Length: 352
Image (cartoon, rainbow, N blue to C red):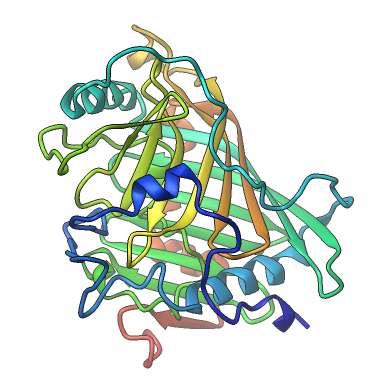
């Protein structure tokens, strides 16, 4: 019954904004945050990272969202459009000269220093069109956990059903906890070989730390000019080697939008960050300004009438709620008991 949501092609469903026009430019496009750098010259590459090419990831993403939705709590039909016409932040007055890339990234990096551990309660809201063109919505609750630099977990479950996505620095995984309980697992060092048809979500666990502004960026690895651009009074950067472009607030240097770059430079996944909030601090980092992080992340996939919203509340840097077993795949397998495992590094063969 969910086949009506599958896409039949990948194309722009609304005009390019100035953000996309600024982002799709000549030069090298690089993907992956763990030294899996791919160079794409003039939009061509013999083996491009398949995040934005084809429909496999988008189809699986929609399927997982909608299959997950039936175990979540039903919501009322919302009035707002699923995908707004304008995904840029409100324009702000900013008459300051453009900062250098080094200075801007250094300011951003300073905001990430207190965020070495983050715990938050999480709520995921799903909004989509049914086969009759009517808006439907669902939601579920769980928790988000992060331990720098590469341990991350997002759990949305109810009565043992839902999903759990995470990574431990060596492996990353996604538990689909529906009737056909499936575990998808791959190695970090093989991310550049990931087949788009096998991973259910367009946002991998390895992308989340950068989307949420948790990890620093190398300020000395400067992209080709223009390294910093102005969009709606904010600062646009595209850090080399990360497969992302970021729009930073000029005053806080925190991200307000993060896009995952597709194989030919398009914004394949757009993440809008709003509702910044101060985090409760642990005793060891009680000095200095309180760290802040977006409390709301809206995820839009290219050419999909689907919106996934992640709301984070009760955010804290106190690591006492974060346990080692939250990032231990072997323990998680014992808890969730998947019926089958898909080896993302070799999807043709089941994992042991």
